[in-house]
Length: 396
Ligand code: SF4
Image 1 (tube, rainbow, N blue to C red):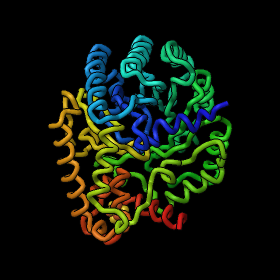
Image 2: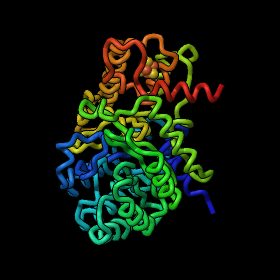
Image 3: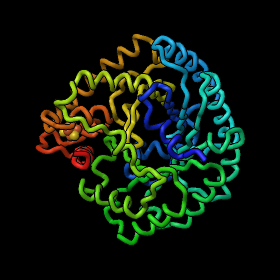
Image 4: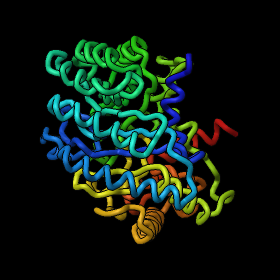
């Protein structure tokens, strides 16, 4: 049997190696009744449970985009996209009607066919906070036109919430595995995460070990509203991860693989800033794109699940366009804004000036954290600094 886990992950994580993989993120949903402190969606936006994009608008937008994408790739001499991952989120999609969900899967498949990709997945974000009775018809609708390998779920779970109602999560995970083999568990946190007890972590690990999750990851994004809400210190944060890693070790499953495999820790003096910037720019433009809820296209890069360059989450807009995102004008605009965005953060955050990990930080997306740091800070408080250090030391 082929190793589905590894292949599936490759669609998402090794995007830039041969230009054969492409990730399209569509903002369909902001609503959620979860309470994750690291959620990128501000609380007021989480209240709306209606789809953010109508099916008609989505169909039209994707049809035009397919042609733009094909033309851009032909001009850039890229081969056909082999693996396409369409992710819908970032909120709860399972609020939507069965009709919407079924058509969403049909439209996704239509787009995949129109760009002639060999493999495709539709990845659906869900919080799991539903009764089986309410949600099963929606899973049936979603999976009606897709094979088990074409449907996957990003199951976002807050361990403190799990500690209160574990059975709900066991039931929900059982249900998801009825419809897909590709379930990734994304761990999120509320502002009392530091109160999790040893016993809570052990129980949570038992839950993880009871299912064949293909990947464990850590979903945490910041914006002006949620920064400082999670009261973990950097050390507590890494200890928590390390405990979970030890308790849930499984050689078939990647654990925070992005951190270890995707973060190429290159000391600043070993790679030129400009060269690295260009690599980063090409990677973003050729492999990821995001359609936001306003119908604007963004080049987007994310790591740790959810760090975006987007005004929706208090980031400055970096070239959003209603038209063809690949027009020369739009790519140039994006490049200029990205340079100015990076420079602004690097100059505002004092510790960046001589940082060993400047290039890594820039290409990881983590640099965005620095814009929320105190301006007079002596040492970098960005969680990335600790992570880079740890990986760098372990690879020496
Ligand atoms: S790790 Fe910290 S100091 Fe280094 S570049 Fe990133 S934000 Fe700046």
